[in-house]
Image 1 (cartoon, rainbow, N blue to C red):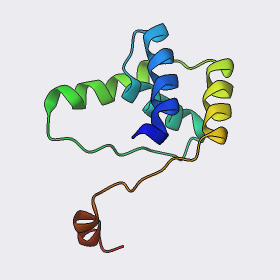
Image 2: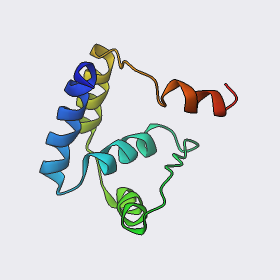
Image 3: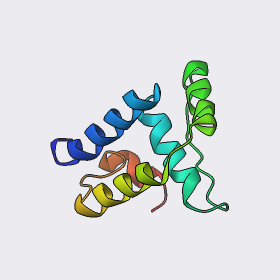
Image 4: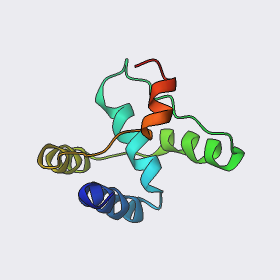
Length: 92
């Protein structure tokens, strides 16, 4: 988590500027990449579903996108998506 904090901080700062959550900024960034990229976030909570849907309304400027891309290029995201035992269940 410590190694990835720079990206979390950046998304949090942009989220605060846009009155959004960091998760919404991350989803909005994915949606801005290519028209055929469709993020599929998983959740079991209705409030998180509403939060995820709200990402569609967020408009990231060209400067926002450049800033996220620049930061992402400088950060080596570390760690696995799932703990090892759960990762084995994914079939990878």
